[in-house]
Image 1 (cartoon, rainbow, N blue to C red):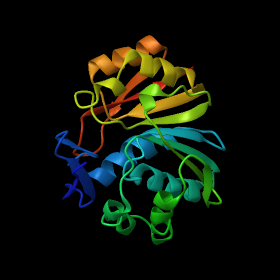
Image 2 (tube, rainbow, N blue to C red):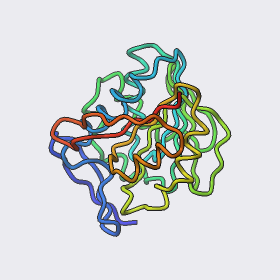
Image 3 (cartoon, rainbow, N blue to C red):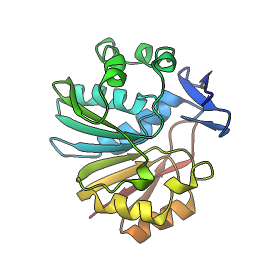
Length: 220
């Protein structure tokens, strides 16, 4: 798969896939988007002492890196499972600038995130435990329970199979009580599918200079 590295408006990089005409992150700010949606509206909104996080789309590892930074800051033991169908090559990963944009003590964990073996648990820090699973998410039945879901698949018009009622029904079932799902996508059809699955859905302000709204669903 051909991939181009591009600079976004906040100075951080993202990847562009010409065959899909799709970016991995917002061109208005990759770092800003991930920090706002998945850390501020996701991780920080979870009050569990040992949050269990499920990420749909490991991608560049940016969400995981920012979660490590927050887990270390708050000293919460975090169990992080990330699903990815198309792992990126180390050649691409080593060209991305994310380690330069986080705290120096966090930057050191970026390559270990990507070097960690697939399909098994790995201790990245004393507060962050990672399991990356290489799989086709649409063919997977999830049996574990999670406190937070980072739903970060490609956009519905690019990957419609990732945005179905069946998918969100499964997301609801694998959330613990008071668990939350956050996604950058605020389309009405996605909101209605979340509601049909059982979520209580909030429309929240999007990241600065980015999308106007994002969605957060809660299992009550």
